[in-house]
Image (tube, rainbow, N blue to C red):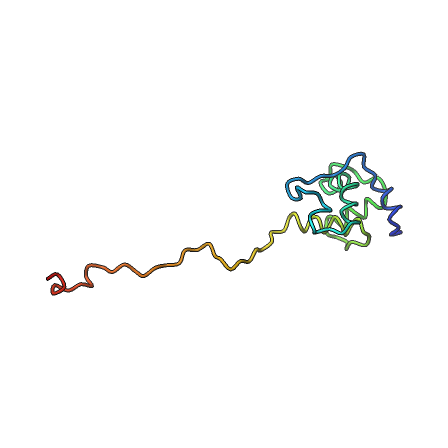
Length: 124
């Protein structure tokens, strides 16, 4: 199959733009996670890609069938649309670890001294 971006865009035509305000409230291009091409692909074709991934849309051509195989994990992504969707899934489904110098656990203070520690002579 050809990796020509214009042919790929024709294979995944959508009537609406795709938004993911939950994960990318400022948009794909302003998130800093996607290249301009990837952000454009997700904006323009994300509705079809999500429908294919969720199996609410049936594949209409060989490009969409190959995309479905990539989305299910049986094939490696070979074109920009497949790579953009795999990257989107990775960013939205995988928990990322956040490392900081400040922890959430409380620092334990000195242990309280029990009454048995004091002797009778201390009570004077």
